[in-house]
Length: 337
Image (cartoon, rainbow, N blue to C red):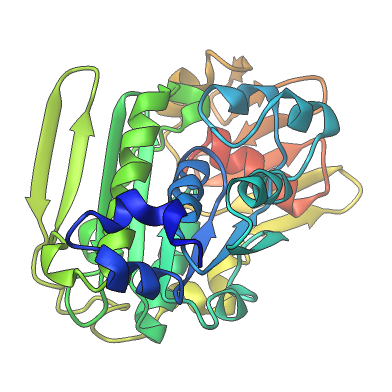
């Protein structure tokens, strides 16, 4: 190990040389290498993490460059997968770190393998379906899970530790999210950086055995309107299917069988929710799509190739593709979790 590289970090008394040696032996998984994930990966690689596994299903687009710090215009021109583009940059930052880049959609089918020999999982995703999947696998395998989210000028983050804290399901009930995404409400880069930097700090505390300094709370803030709240973790919900009854519903096959290709229609149907607020989605999508509202459904045309048909019973038709992963990406971007 080149100690000179980490000399300033080792001067920080809670880490020292012993903490640096621990970091070099640790392995982490970052799911989602977009706004949050690129900041998290940047900090962890510069700090000297031993092994980094990154997973992302998406490609670099021009609109990413405003906040996704590892990408540049050449990545956009080459349409590089985010995981590959991130790995290329991270290798140039610290060639001593072992980096594994995986271009894939994280599902119940591959999450067990992705978390093999991992000490910590960090959330860089943009949807709660994947977050509940990460939450469930982490509590099943006794791996700490760092949750983070940012939209508009707001952010929130928490570190969930199996057998010590309530889990994500206890804090945020499935179906209770407001549905806002960066593609509908926008986002400013500093809010993203703050959340991801907090996640990186939590990671450093845990991975260097400074666990006594890990907060047992959810931090939420709005950097534009100067608000911040520190919400202490509640006791676990007695019937929580993740951290209490250990049913792990997101790991069951049916939990993510929500995408269906409609034969001969160049359309993927996604049925994730029991109902959808059509009026709310009309307002949410009006700035990014051409809207047509009828008494029975909402049509939202994003571009010449892609459109949504949204029904009150929770069904969404993603028209213009038969690719389930691409359809899911559009759904998460514009409809939300």
